Amino acid sequence: MDGHYSFENCLFCDIGHLATAVDLLYLDDKVVAFPDHRPAALRHYLVIPVEHVGPTVNSLDKIPKHYELVNHMLNVGKDLLRRDAPNSVEHRFGFHQPPIHTIDHLHLHCLALPFIPEWRKVKYTPLDSIGFVDANNVLEKLKP
Ligand SMILES: [Zn+2]
Ligand SMILES: [Zn+2]
Image 1 (spheres, rainbow, N blue to C red):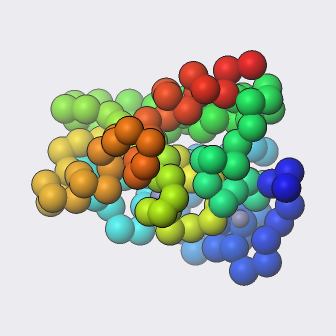
Image 2 (cartoon, rainbow, N blue to C red; image 1 turned 90 degrees about the horizontal axis):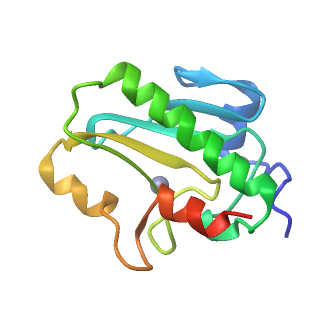
Image 3 (tube, rainbow, N blue to C red; image 1 turned 90 degrees about the vertical axis):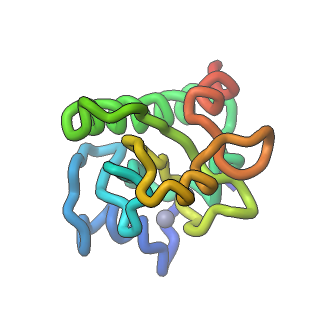
């Protein structure tokens, strides 16, 4: 599966292609960013590729195209949090891995802490090889 096709009935494809239903924070020909509809922190944004990539971060291959995509997603997220939450205690960036991902379209979680409420951190704290994975570790693995 090359992962670069549009899914019918994919909510995030709709957002990427039609820019509907959400307040876009950022948009270019590769990615879009918008607030998570169930924020878990002071600021909680999602950055997604416009084209369908998925279902999860494990679908990414060690190729320059995917490395550049994740690098770009991360830079967009960093810029947005720097702009909107410069005084936050920590900025955290990462992806959900199976089985806890909920939408089959790659999306980078960008969180400006603290978590609100505190218990919501469980879903966004890196573990070894399951659950939440730090975006920098993903980039490291994809490095061509
Ligand atoms: Zn999609
Ligand atoms: Zn997620």
